[in-house]
Amino acid sequence: MKKHILVVDDDSEITTMMEQILRKNNYEVTVSHDGPHAIEQSHKHRIDLILLDIRMPFFSGFWFCDAFKKKPQTRNIPIVIVSGLLDEEQTKKAYELGAHACLKKPFTAKELLDVIEKAVA
Image (tube, rainbow, N blue to C red; front, side):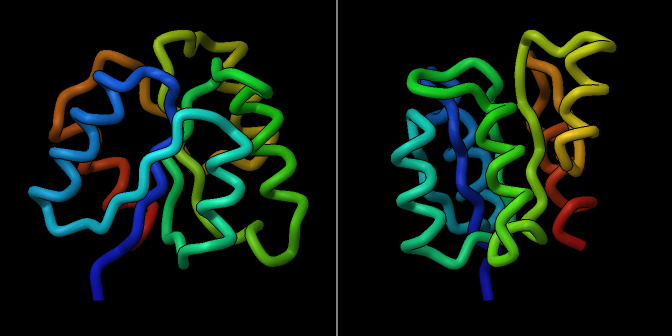
């Protein structure tokens, strides 16, 4: 069975690029451009991993990660923070909130696939 990845980013160029890479590598993909839609999609589908931007409309990726990790039904879904804003402080905060990994934009297809494969192994 294909692994299902939820891509959450308000930049449609980034989500399109990630979606193409993931589909080409046999992943099922759902895309959300904001947190409320991402939450809705996470309840609608069986999600195996979330790729999550930090800066989004409505609420931040950090808020989403924290809320997601506090719910028993979603706490075991790996979250990979994907952002151009990642510095040492942001990375530390992501891990404290329960992120499985962090990936700094821009990234290569190989870097994206490597972090996903480690998270869903």
